[in-house]
Length: 191
Ligand code: NI
Image 1 (cartoon, rainbow, N blue to C red):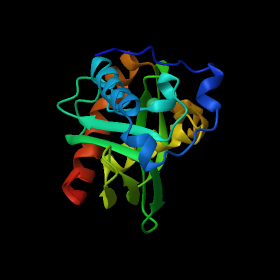
Image 2: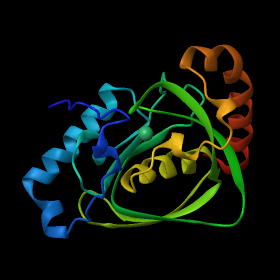
Image 3: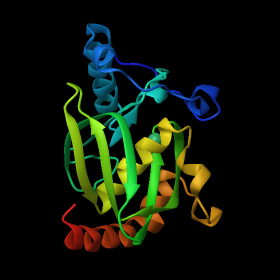
């Protein structure tokens, strides 16, 4: 399975508009092969998610999966999920501070406010309807990936630039406290 190069911040592709897919186009062998490559590339890079735009395909598709992820050891597992034409809306007012990183932003993390509960409407890779409530840290992952499909990168949303740090400094100075916060969120929301 082909592993694709991942666009890095500064590449204009990450800011381009993407198009929605029809069911016919989604069902095509080309698009199904592309989805396989998107998943393979996400796994190869140890990403918690990857959006089509990050591998230079301007279509509204992203993949999410967390399986004992070494980049994000505190993240709860999420089964492989492919979202086609996803739309998110917040449920309720509650937000949390999420320390994020991104495969398109080398060696930088920062704190982004995310909704603690969202409703996601999308299709799966076979065109079946998805309509789910997603909660907790996993809701943050969904928002990060769907942001990519709207041309947004997490660095756009960091309110306090003092939270920016490299991955090493995150581990050294911030991971323990953040992992504690994540544990409390997961206790509360189950994900
Ligand atoms: Ni990202």
